[in-house]
Amino acid sequence: MINKKNSFLLSHVEKHWLSYLLGFAGIYFISIRGQYTLLDLLDLFLHEAGHFFFSIFGQFIHSLGGTLMQILLPLICAFIFFINGRKYMTQIFLFWLGHNFINISVYVDDANKMKLKIIGGSHDWNWILNQLDLIEYSTEIGYGFLALSISAFLTMFFVPYFIHDNETTRD
Image (cartoon, rainbow, N blue to C red; front, side, top):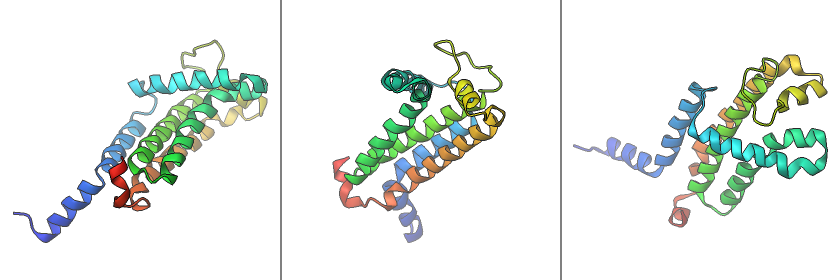
């Protein structure tokens, strides 16, 4: 039997189902940080495309370009969907941003350890952090990116509270 309290709970979950689904997926990806998943392949393609597009800006930006693309593309898409009131698409791109931050955190953390198999020969973050004389802080900087991931996931979870239901028919 569904009482008033359970009815409210079911209504809430029905309205915010994507928040819960992607929220649990975010927790899962954080818990397996460093393990390869299919979504990492998409992140890798985006990362490598970033090197291509940012190669005209010199060695430093070229090296940073893969990471920049992993951050900028989902962030810009999330922003565009947010200002257009598309909560589900905003959430999907914020989730992807959070996943990219996990991916970046692993890559940055490895800059000093050099254990990851690298495509293209050189380790971007090893080179970047050596240029900035911050290589000994690669683990801490990696955890900073992990914190950004958690922030992206939390923002993704609360998007429906900022975009109201009258906009959902567009998604």
